[in-house]
Image (tube, rainbow, N blue to C red; front, side, top):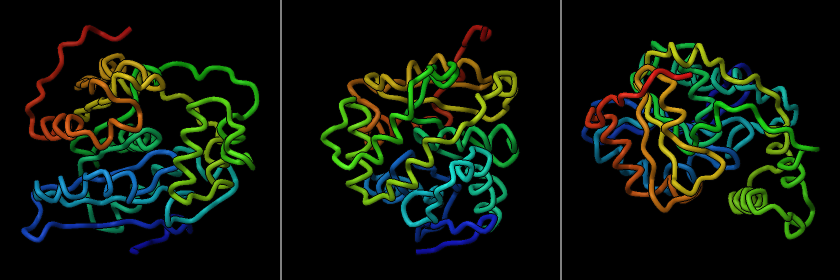
Amino acid sequence: MASFLSDGVQIAYDDITPAGGADRTIVLIHGFASNRVEGWKRTGWYAAFERRLTRVIALDQRGHGESAKLYDPQAYERERLAADVLNLMDELGVERADMFGYSMGTRTALELAVAQPSRLSHLILGGVGGKLLEKAPDVAGEPMADAMLAEDPSTIIQPMLRSFRQFADEQGEDLKALAAVTRVRNMPFNHAALRDMPVPTLVVAGSGDEGAGDPEALARIFPHGHAVTIPGCDHFSAIPHALTKAAVFDFLDGLIGEDEFPPFE
């Protein structure tokens, strides 16, 4: 396991260059309760990028996988997560790269893209859609944190919460750290900053991903936004799907033309 210190926090990562050399570099940022191995290697992305002569850099976000486990919600502010990625790029001497975030990882990637657009060649946001632009609904209590900390997972009634808890248990994740991740309170993304973000951006999500919303509704806010919906997939099944890989590679190869979206309102 390779690791480095990002503002004093140990971050685990992989840095894989194909044997034949690399034509480009991509940074992969996994989602909540996942890690670099489960989110990207097991789902076939490492191998797919290797076949395309792409250098892969993938980290375990703090609180996940083999990175440091922290229990203060403020440690997981979006700016800190984005700083970990930027610090890793600096550590590895990567000035500019493509970036692919999934689910929670999209928020990290988008934070970095808005703050440091010159560091990105292309941005891919997976497992999200128009709901990212909406105000978070008022929810009583802390249901995701409660699900992570439930002594008996069978008592979790809401299917989505139960799915994330089962996923976290399968990965052997630190449930207390994950509960802290869910308790952080980030400001909504600034819509004006998204409208000005110059990086070509692909938004891709499964048609059955109810938590994401319509990818086009998010893509249209970006000046160079593109949207792809993967039929028959939910939040978890979209990431390994061949159609998701095809959409990502077509986008990186310039085969997905710029969408003619009307002005965002």
